[in-house]
Every structure is written in structure tokens, then in C-alpha cells.
Image (cartoon, rainbow, N blue to C red; front, side):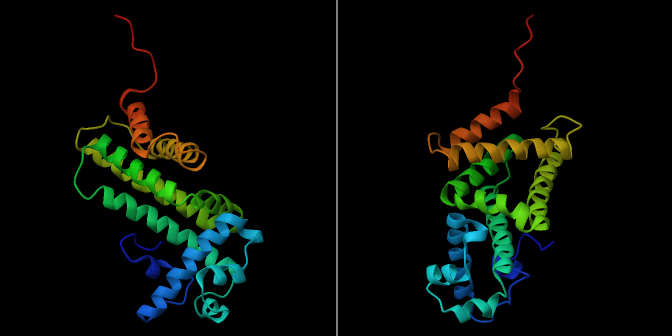
Length: 211
């Protein structure tokens, strides 16, 4: 799996890596246009012509970097995953307590999803178009959460015994909160949704025991 700290264009193993700034800009236009095309029309209805028209590039430019619609779709999934990682990394530049880290990471994801609603349709379709990339997307996300939980345990900020299953549970909560409150509606701000999720991590949902 490509490292998370390299440029999105360099992560696109399926693309022919551009060697010039002009080439990098063209590749970026194609990926951004593909996000809109796939997001609006879905994988099967989307077309290479639609992507190049949205990008304002010649059809030949597409084949300079990609061999097929499947290939740019795989590259786009990797690109979107990289952007989510980057958003979280920027939100976590300064060290934070464990629970604050989870709130900041979720806020960053929710804001990204609000600005790029197409990510949900694209990732959902990826399960059937490219199952390997679909699995990598979620496994890598769960791995990062697992690592953060482990760090919190080591610092004594979280209870012992937290592991991979807890990370998947947190990720599942985050994904569906994003679907409900960034894609289906904007009725809650990302910060408020993240605080709601964080309160569940802090307090759980059981009623207080009576003394």
C-alpha cells in the first residue's frame, strides 16, 4: 500500500506519472472531473468523454494518463482516500488528548464529506467495481484509528483492551453520521456531529447506575 505522506499524484500507481507541472495540472483536472462525473452519473453511466468534457481536456489527454474508465476510477478512489487522510492529518498537526484527537479527526472528515458529497457514491460503487480498493479504503482507515486508540491507551488516556474491533465500531459510527448529516442533510454542523459522537465515546449510552 502506498505511503500516506506522499503527493496524491504520486500515489496513483495506475496512472502514468506526469513529469511536468502542466502534466500534473492536467491529471488533477481529470481526477476532479472524474469525481463529478462518477458522483453524478455512477460508474456504469459515466463516460470517458464526459470526464474529458468536464475537465476541458482533449480525449487524447485522458489516454496519456489512463487506459480505461476502470483505471481512472481506481485512481480516483485512491485519490479521495488520500484527501481524507490529508484532511485528518492537518486537523491533528498539534498533539491532542486521545478523545480530542478523535473529535478533531471526525470533524475534518465530516467537513470534507460535506464539501465532496460524491465520495459516498464513489466509495459505495467501489465495492462492486474494485472490491480490493474498497477493502483497502476501509482497512487503512480502521488501522489509523486502531493506532490512535493504542496511543491513547499507552498514555493512560483510554482504558485497556481497546483494539481493532473498537476501531471498526468507531469508523462505522463516523461513516453513517457523515451519510446522515453531510450527504442527506446539512441540519447539523460538522463540529456538533463530532461532539455528539465524542460524547458517546466519553460516556457511552447506558443510564447512570443509581446509588
